[in-house]
Length: 190
Length: 190
DNA sequence: CCCGCTCGTTTGTGATCACATTCCTGTCAT
DNA sequence: ATGACAGGAATGTGATCACAAACGAGCGGG
Image (cartoon, rainbow over all chains, first blue to last red; front, top):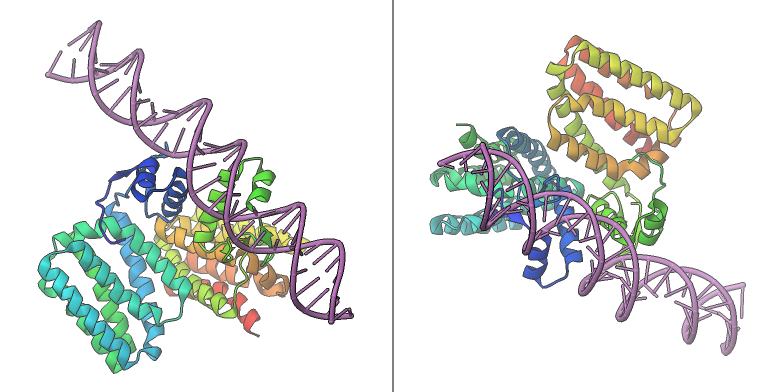
């Protein structure tokens, strides 16, 4: 999810088991769960790799984010108090630091934390779970996407989200999230 | 998914293993995968039951269907040829038979087949997978919902979907799907 | 120089087992 | 009659093992 692994990296159950100091059974369980969610891809012979997403698949996952996240934000809006917006500002500051240090994994992690912080307020656990499934699938690819991104406009959309939250502007909030979520896609297509 | 199990039914790994003539390992794997998707719920001690959904959760899942399924239908629309609509008519006929025979599981299964047939045309596997996750979560509850439903208006929305598909009417299609998907919810609330 | 084959190694799968925890049933005291 | 309690049965978990399939390195032939 956090882009710590590149796409196409092969993983083995025994390797994971050794890495975490457990036996094969729990490692296999985790792998199969993640594969079922699309976070890992299983070759026909059962071999496991991080997914190598086709452009069409990326477009589809971005469309899902663009569909689900504005809805979550909209549901969070009525409950967005000042303390929440404060917290989001703080997270945004951390994002800026990670960008400055060029720490991609930390940037992705904190960026998702920003979004998750909003969505937790929506009190919609099933929706949040679906969105996180999408994040999981996009993880390894996001690293590549963000590595080539110019850094200046990374935070613009987050500022728009915060402004819309503060103003209680529901259509603006949906628009800002849609823009934030789909910006990565445009880079890829271009 | 097909409403063959009531909500709250307890399941055991050994029981499932015996039922399918396998050992505990694959049975456990399947249970954990389904639990991860929300299709089964795990008690704190690891015990497994079919989920007992709260009204809020049902509302949320219905909202997800209402969000995702019109999108899928809209993506399928440009590729909806006559042969597809023919096929959907046939499926609709089978639905009528199951309703007449009061076979709830078969009705649910065929109803989902109707929807899935449309969505397969959308060429959006990730979206379809998410929708099926939602179906999976709603499965045991759908049985209860449909048991109390009046039978007359069950097919009305499907006819509206078919008409919109044939006419290439995109807004009408989205509306018809939204209505079809959320009709069950209204019963529950009332 | 390239392609195909072979054999040893790696890997996933399913089965079985020991163990700790939980659940349930039957009993007994109040 | 009701509640607590104790003991046995049932359950999930993680580990280990045997086996078949797949992979890959190395070799030989064209």
